[in-house]
Length: 246
Image (cartoon, rainbow, N blue to C red; front, side, top):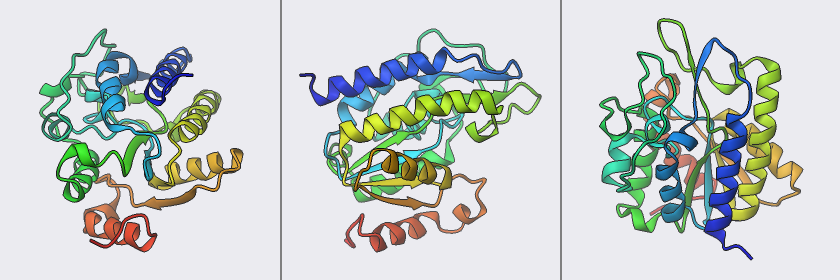
């Protein structure tokens, strides 16, 4: 029988392959960080995703200056280098928008969402070696969509053409069900309403008794997140009995 880490790594690698085989629209650049930054993601799984972790936090899809650069969920570059201490290489980079290059750990742009989320985790667990018994962070969708227009804006999965979105979401739903089954967390937390919706659907499909909750998404595009996001989220997690008041 495969051990936990091998099972999760192999399941994730197959998931990435299937997502890359979808025929996406020609009007977007499509980045697959689980392919070109696979070495980063694999190391992250091996070191920081543990079976029976207490809480699985689920994001929506990679940000352009976070996971798109590092292959790690909410993977703000400074966090990956200085807190997680993961340093791997990128391979076989795709075509990219001029305003959204893939630069890996030399990317000078900061992913605010990742900085906020991992900053909260680091505040509670100053040593990265100590959080994985309690927390795992994953994303629902592993694909980045960048508009080919002059702005190179990020396209969220909800805005994809319906046939493509349904095909992609089918794969993501199946993967989500599987990682919850493999990881076996006590509770799951959606980072934002989209992730919450997907977690509720997964728990319903699998007839699970796992506790489902959500937190405010840390994106600076969310006005509420720019007014004390950390304290708001800490209060919610304590109120929901996901975190103790320490």
